Image (tube, rainbow, N blue to C red; front, side, top):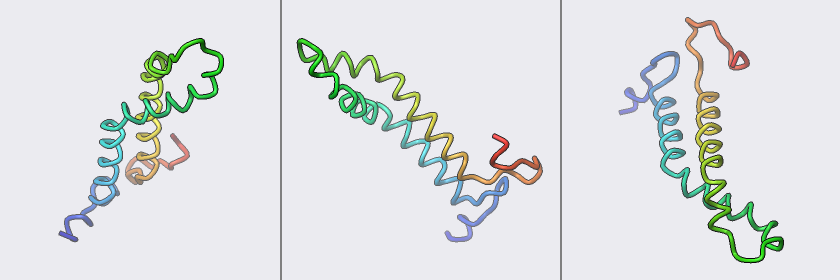
Length: 95
């Protein structure tokens, strides 16, 4: 099993690709729950300005942008953890 995790593909081990895949998959699966929590936290300072409890409406409005930010930032940081193939002659700063 250890030899399988050490196999190199595009200058990254299978273990690194597995971590990358798990991070992206978790972000995709948990984006709705995390965005709901972030929406509720973001609404707290604005509660005193609304006449009724509009948490659900506020959270719904912010859900899509938060989901995009969560998935995009996770993919960005997951890619930063990988090494670019030496054939491409790129550095992490190039992106």
